[in-house]
Image (cartoon, rainbow, N blue to C red; front, side, top):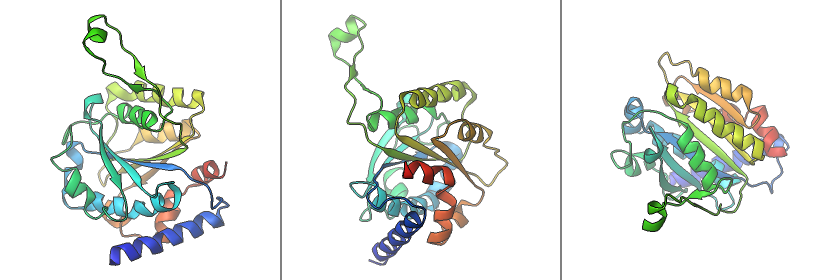
Length: 248
């Protein structure tokens, strides 16, 4: 019950921050939370820090998402390790990663590639057609068809990783973001690089500077970040570019 009350208060504080920034009360955007489940991030998942991070982001779903919830995807390396974990709400957010992700998702403790989960996000929001595996005949004749895209939805993706993208996936990630920009997809990608070690997150900085719908927040102390006040957390996440995107 205390958590519910805190989330409600946090949502009210977020709404106030958005009001001050000129973001209309009626504006809505679907939310996705992408969580890196590579081996180097295992400690933060198991000690509950990333579960607390999800709890702190639930108010964003409450305020911005039409359904008041946030979709959660996990990823590590490759297309086969992108997984839609489910939706997170005020009612189920406590210990969400501990209960639903650790040792349960494909690619747990794997490597790190960004492009495949970004592609899946765009499919989920209707900006790309969803891939269809096809039956025996389509496989026999080498025919691969895509399912029609879902309804296109204005969306925000919060993408959390503790490490650099694998070198083999750098060009592909740029291609996915470039194609999205050319199509005019109404999606904003907020990348969060969370690592206390000497990870520069140079690639995240590069794509944040290159694309107008892509921002980056570097967090060197994730334990401290999840304990910030609502006002401090909103100041970190709601950068000028994201606020401008929300106002448009």
